Length: 162
Image 1 (spheres, rainbow, N blue to C red):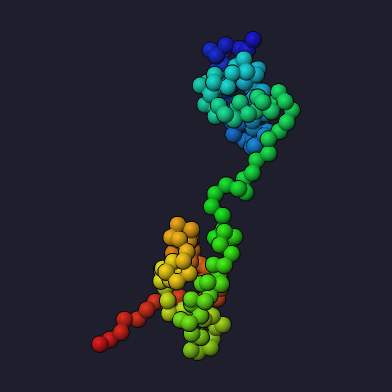
Image 2 (spheres, helix red, strand yellow):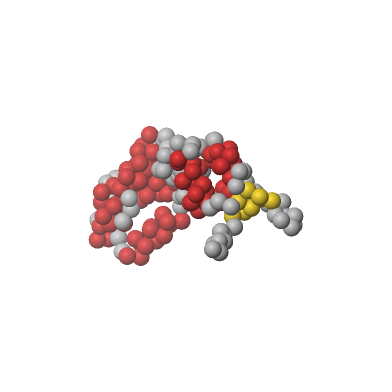
């Protein structure tokens, strides 16, 4: 039988929370499960109420301790993937659009090509010309970064004088 809830002082709780915060992944779950087994009768719900820990993490730690099988995280699968990985033809399509609009540096001081097209216009052309969906394309800013990576420099358009 674990220690009743009123026996855990605020100092002990803060020590447990601090220790759990310094650990990561399966070590953290194992620590939280051990504390839950020792002090909260293996109840993840009580550990959540008293310690403020995620109940699912505590339950997973308890299952890992019981079975001896440690779950492996897949952090690489989280978040949005690089647009070049998701759309392998994107660079070639951008290059085909911008090459017609690009010009070399007039003073030949750099190897960059200056594009007379904006990143927003490139994004709109990818939708209209190449048939991409708006949702699958990267943002305007990312399109500008891709253009820079491909060796294009965007210049501000000068307004024509009448």
